[in-house]
Image 1 (cartoon, rainbow, N blue to C red):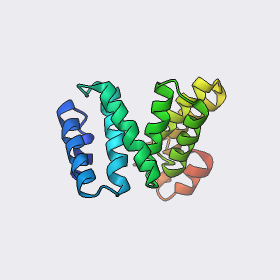
Image 2 (cartoon, rainbow, N blue to C red):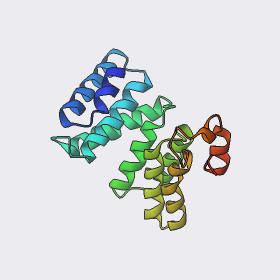
Image 3 (cartoon, one colour):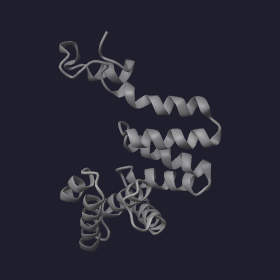
Image 4 (cartoon, rainbow, N blue to C red):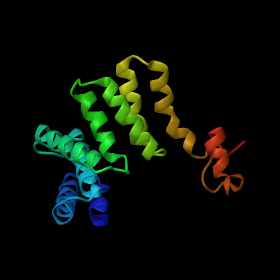
Length: 168
């Protein structure tokens, strides 16, 4: 699993295919473990939407199947819900259902920029522009406004969460 995540983050088509193969091995060896389904769903969706897949439509369909399986297994990573929300939006599906999945993803991955981006996209297509903008800019408020070397930032995580910035 960790080796697959490593390859996934190398962001090349070859590395992506390697990651998908490794996530497939996790699925084969642990078919009822949520992590295999959720990682496979996320990887297939990511690769298909970023031009790494040779068969993007097939991979998007597989991504949805794995995401639904991950959600059924109780995915606590939020990855399955990110994929479901994104694919419902992509396919012109039920935007209210997409919003529910996007919010589940955010609840499970409260610092994930991808979860915020998917929620923002769903809100945009629902016509909730202000909510979309809030979701789109939220990730920038999760980190310090200054570099990590800022002496004022050390140990002030609570301030980041409550005020959006730890630097004056």
